[in-house]
Image 1 (cartoon, rainbow, N blue to C red):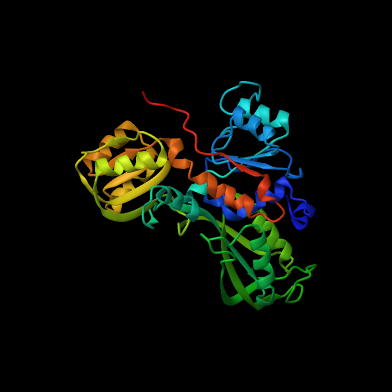
Image 2: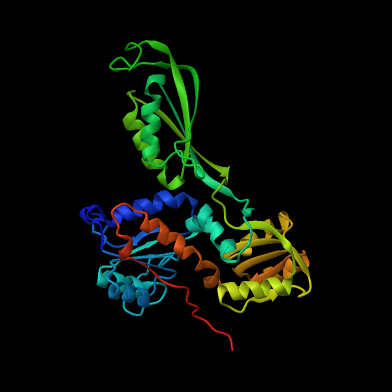
Length: 374
């Protein structure tokens, strides 16, 4: 039974969306991805949450059956919005129709969850591997925002920018840099400057404040910075750029006691409940293992860079597997879904720890393989 304190709190779909955004920021997702709230009423009260891997018609129906009006998944219902969300329509259209018809909100955390430290750790933990290091070495696109203004206003401006999404670098928040300088400008005759006199050329001490943000949030960050700025004409400069990824990176690499490739593949199959496909000589000795959830082909180069003996992932393309073997990297394909089911409990933990949500109203699906081998 829910406690009185939990029962008295009203948690909306927007509240839950914001909790997930804080845990798994959208700026960690790939540019092509769709994450967050994809369908539903943000103002609706959360009555229950079903957490699973895929947003299918069946999972929407199951959400209704267990009394949940939120379906939280790893995979998004669609990457391109369906033109006709009708019953049975492909590419997420049928699931979207079912969700809208049943008033079930669709939330997801996809490649942003893959990159979250807890998400990237989930597969090696499921495989019983020792703690490892991040594998991915790609750059993260950002907007670099620079604001010039009086030093006494810097803290207020930085706070406003942070509230709009600036300053998040990996697990660090409110990250900023400032430096002192001298600004100069000529005030118009009818101006009302913060410092200086109308019609005069002025020089004044200023600070230069720099923060980065997700490019999608740049307009909102600029607007908040300008609103918090005391100048008539605040100077806010946005520059596109990239930063090295920190804690939020896909994949892991770790060392293990030497085993054969056949032994490791057998252990992967047992722990994940599948029959893996293996590329490489069965007797090969493995002592350095890279892991990646889902489609891991993009991380083959990184696995080679860190001198991994094998990449354990969901799937890779045929020619990518051949190239990897030629370069000295074995591949164990355990199925896209089976390598991603360990992410589902990570999502569930984020929901269960949301203030105001009764953990008893959070239902988590067990891993289910939808394919089979004879």
